[in-house]
Image 1 (cartoon, helix red, strand yellow):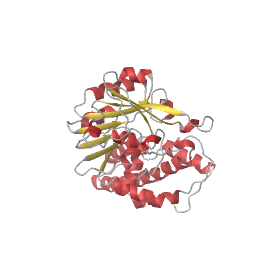
Image 2: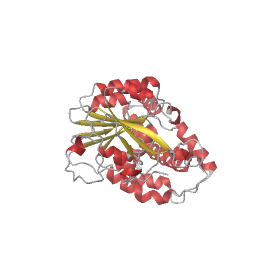
Image 3: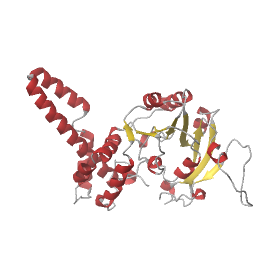
Image 4: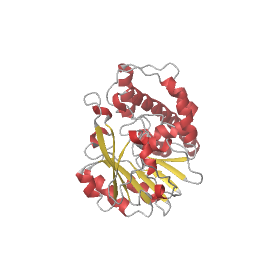
Length: 325
């Protein structure tokens, strides 16, 4: 199935290639930079396998939590007569930027209430504030969802000027809530998350902000974070896969690991340069051919094998995946 949202750097165009190089066996699957969850939603849950979706963007994880746990309340806040205008887009941005009832604000208010009220009064006030905070989470999730749908390139910064009726996505949201039933949703820094879930049977899929494109994301990701990610993965007990843009810096950073070359259509450049492709790499700490080598193959005249080449090249359209135009 597809994700219920589009997102910057989504892997719809590459996920069939990505699945092909998943390890043969693993007991827990962790998406470290979840984003729109395209890789997660595109695969069927493996029975007995723990699943974790994580993103450091709290608006994203709040949205996923509300879709998973408060589906009908979320749909109610989306509204059955949604507007789609530049004015509403500005209102939504202001609401998201303010982020009513942040955890810090809630903690401060509870501390003041506990200091100034009697225990019975404090319990009544605490229950009321927590309930209001939950409602605010759902309102914020609905506002963020609309912001994604109404923005250009799902960037949440500029109005797209394209018609969009969020009511058409209600069924997809309902399906997403069912798909996420047994998925743990986390909002952690990647290093803390990896160290928490690392086991011998763990498999981490990482799709970090691409090198020198970090400015497109709301969450800050510095050059030092690329190095910190490599160092964290290097010490993992489990298996991991990282997808990146193909550049000399990343190849040098992950020297010594398996590196596969892949390409997809460059969606952003199609208007000006039709057929333009975007080179990417898939990096693993295990032999990416292990799944393919374990499956029976019927050879024919059209088989092509690169032998023992360190790099192999794959195109998304040759894998039967339609580009996300």
